[in-house]
Length: 347
Ligand code: GLV
Ligand code: GLV
Image (cartoon, rainbow, N blue to C red; front, side, top):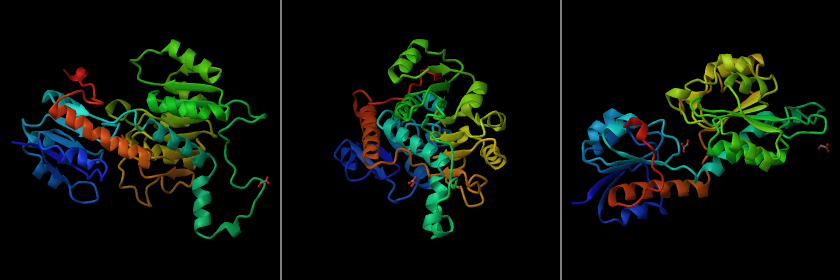
């Protein structure tokens, strides 16, 4: 009898046939064009061999227990897996698939966009014009001025900080080289030693004064733009907090295109209000999508927020969906999964 496969979101006409054309599968697909209802998922998961989830679907013991012993694979259409209880997955000997690499460039592009928008009042400016208010703000010598991302003859140093220094952070660094940046600082898991040789090679390749692993204190004090690009999860909860924000430069920009849980929203709103930092560009906010007009960050004019769209390009989302399908197919029918989450730490 066929393997039951639950798909939490329609993956579109280019990708669904990869699954539909497999006679080995009996597909159960969430029929609506919004995040899958929890009750629907819990009702349909029993007896499934595989499930394709989105980052909006919580994969916890409740869901895995409902699925039962038939379940072999959880394939998420995301690079992040904060929504998946990896320990519970390992205890059940499940395979977990995810979609790294294919979205690196799209997320790096958007990270640069957020840095520019936050620094240059892109959000405020566009909103004013949209409301028909340009006539109240004619060109002024110092109107709408913000800190410049690129270096200038009179401001020749730019230190870019990364909280997390994986694929996406390094792709973001590459994009900033033509802006004339001079230093790259990063902070990553305390357990991973600095990679001195790699860092020296990066500095040489990009003609930077230095690429240096630093502690959070130095990262906060030195960064002109701080990109938060680390995986979420308990180890990084609220690492951007009151303490860190107080140490930052008053002209600094914070960008978060990873997970909302890394940033304490109340502390960031306070930092913006009190001028500890200049601006923020956020693709993710803790508690999303429940971010309404009275959210403290939405009320801060210097905070540009977009609704978790860092990987949202036509090209990349198709590649991510394809990869999610191939991860599931390989896990059930055999062959190497294109990208499997390493669960060895849990065994
Ligand atoms: C997006 O946030 C992802 O994890 O792919
Ligand atoms: C600006 O538009 C300028 O001409 O300097």
